[in-house]
Length: 439
Image (cartoon, rainbow, N blue to C red; front, side):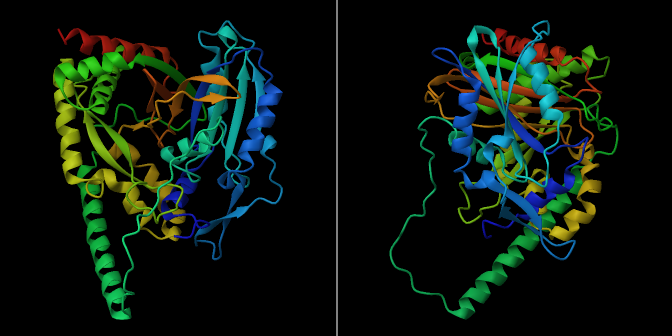
């Protein structure tokens, strides 16, 4: 696909966009400077670096006819500084002033007629630290792509580039061979797509209604949780599974306690998480903003024992991995990427309303390199990623690890979840519950 064309999946994210369903992801990165911070100097520095990242200077232009595709075009009026604002925290009476400010900022939709990103430089944090808040529309990039963009804004970070490996001269294929290969690929994709569609229909749960389903709202609240990675590794060593399995088990325990504290039954059914899977390393030819699939993972909130929850999640994720990212109901991004743009423009918003029938929350893991990173010499302290809320869902969770700390970004529908602190506290409590069972 040419790099200036939006993929069908990119268009799908644009079609889901609405005042109460903004489809941008984000991150809150905190930094510890060596001395006084000049936010306006930082703004100029970030603008200078953003200006040379081609993706950030483009806007969407729909192609003709009305229900056709779309492509990226260079914004002739692009000025990076217009996308970067400065704010100083003043209301120190809030339990977490940064989270409070970021909650209002993340709720604001991006202008879809302009380059689809925004940044905020926030000063006034304890210890003279500052934060850089970033949001990118999901049509522009996925989580892995957003990390690459973020690297380009930091000091002297080399971005790994995927290169094709030459294996000697090749004999040009005959037209007949090309035709046969194309037909075989098309038939294989059609069968694969039919299998995904069948699995989606089978996985839908019309009853009981998802406990996280809610009316869409323009209000958002963010919560930030830090966990010592040593604790996660200790739990993994004691009970097995991958680091991601342990994180999912921690989140399952937190959601269980959170539901009980809200007066909801946790034993009615398990919750189900859509876990995005990056396919960027699998197909270097795909230059779309989103190169994704996904797994559906059962979060067994009905189980009281934390070790049993971890075992059940290991089983669910092992089954997903055995099938691979191109099969199963979680592969809906692949299916969406194979539909014509016109179908997305006509039906994606309606299909999005059915998201609670298939999954209850999104849990994404955004890997970061472990080496030290800086911005204008200020040391990066942590990165809290933010995943957009799916339509009619009240909770979205994003996770990243940096150095020795796991950072969890919680985003909730503010009208449905007025107290995000109880969910943040439940995450910490859930880690302790698993840790105590390691003796």
